[in-house]
Length: 258
Image (cartoon, rainbow, N blue to C red; front, top):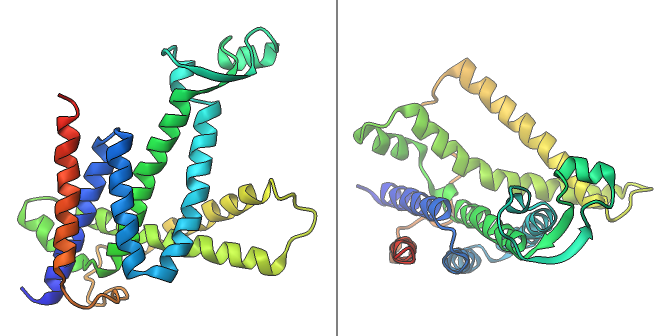
């Protein structure tokens, strides 16, 4: 196996391991450890580019924590929660009582924690995709899936998911840059993040639609022309070390249940 295939295989294993960790772990400390590892790795290898991803991630954390603080699902499903502050108490507004089933709106400790956990899961996957997806060879991944008996469609979906995450960051950067140049008038700063998010959603839907049309028209691509390669053109032991650390966090996560 040549260096390119080694690098692609390692990148795939890192992405797979990181995704498993993000999926199964609900321990904020383990997720934070994985997030810091992926952040440090990305910053060491892609310093200036990673700075923008960090800025973008701050909005993600803010959005997740804010939404879950006010509208934590456990609070409205009757779970025991610790209320930090009441926004609207029960029996204060009939419309709110109707919408919340007489529970009101409150900021809860569990809601803030769940917001941090949810954002850590997303950012862990996002940071790993940013650092490793460009060195991921779709052809190599599909061959690996075929050897273990997994359908090509699933392999293709996995590769596209990891490939599209960094593209969403690039789209966000483009949308933000355009908004700074155009400087729309009569737009409150409070609503600006909402407008940028709406533009990102529209762009992402359009990208997904165009991709689906291409797949329907051409079928499963052969990948004879690979995507732009990563600047990391050689195989490094640091990638294996990083993979080992992620796998160790998964093992540690299982021990926390006992």
